[in-house]
Amino acid sequence: MILLKSKKLIFLLLVFIFGLFILSGCGRTGSPEGELVVYNARNETFVKPLLDRFEKETGIQVRILSGREELVNQIIEEQNNVRADVFISNDAGAMDFLRREGLLAVNGSALLESIGGQFRAPDGSWVGLSARSRVLIYNKDLISEEEMPQTLQELADPAWAGRFMITRGGNSSMVTHVAALRLVWGDDATREWLSAVKDNAGAIVGGHTDIRQAVGAGEFEFGLVNNYYYHLQLEETTGSNVGAVYPDQGPDDMGVFVNVAGLALINGAPNEENARRFIDWMLEEEQQAEFSYYSKETPLNSEVRTVEEARRIDQYKVMDLDLADLGPLWNDARALIEESGLDLGI
Ligand SMILES: [Fe+2]
Image (cartoon, rainbow, N blue to C red; front, side, top):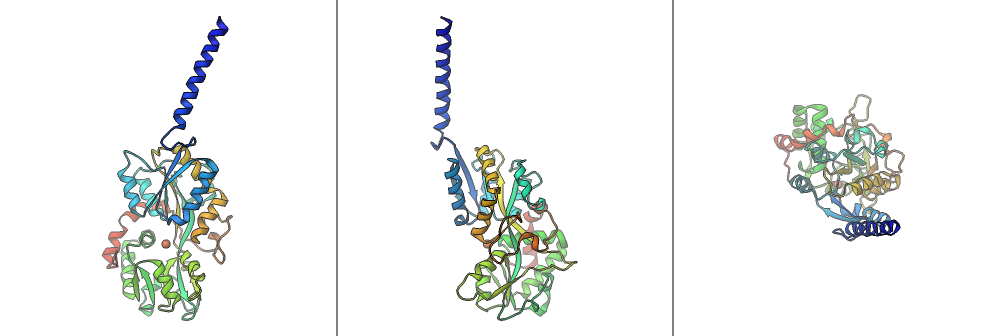
């Protein structure tokens, strides 16, 4: 009798467990491992192969929403009804802004240690994977490396008037670079520098692709770009006789400003466990190399190989600042840029 009763209990328990299993397995996606929602502000062609592989390796169904900076606003708007698990960004300024708004979650994963402390949030809520260093691409037919300006400060010198290119003020790399200069030089000096550089620039263009192509074609001697545009230009069949100067490398110089592309963990992520698993997976060397390779950026873990001819992150002097200090300066950097007279648009 007792035996029968316990058999019945076990049966009921099994039915209950099976029911739970079915319920959890029949979520919105139908994937037993659940899903991962990625808001991606990076070029989708750079991240799609990685996301596909993650999906294949784990069975977690990945859904991507790609866009640009407006995704930051979307994350803010959705804070009471969170949809995103992970935010992939090209910009530490944007990620740290979200952290300061309380929209990111603390991440204590030990794998974060493979990335230098200045390239991630103190609470681990965002982490950089690849470096986007601000360098000067130059046309070797028009100017030699020795003749090139060696510091950014020199771009304000009238001697360079009409000889170089910069992007519009609203370019997201420009905005975060300006935020960094505010931290190092202060607001007044940064505004004056920007104003002089705007006057000196031979052309102010929409994006860095315009710069690398025009410099490659010999229309201007040099331009201020992110390092990967130099590597992209090297691959062109024509106009590839270009070099790159990493500015401010002297003993008293400030070093190159390095922004990062990376990942942020959204606070209240509906698939938090999968999000943490994804970030850990991305920090593994193979994925980090791939993340950097597609875009020709430099891996922030110096153990990871770089693209050909790219300097490793420990082979040049980097501006001595924590990217996590940029958040508040990033938020109103656009206002300072406008004050300098450099248009945010064209
Ligand atoms: Fe870019």
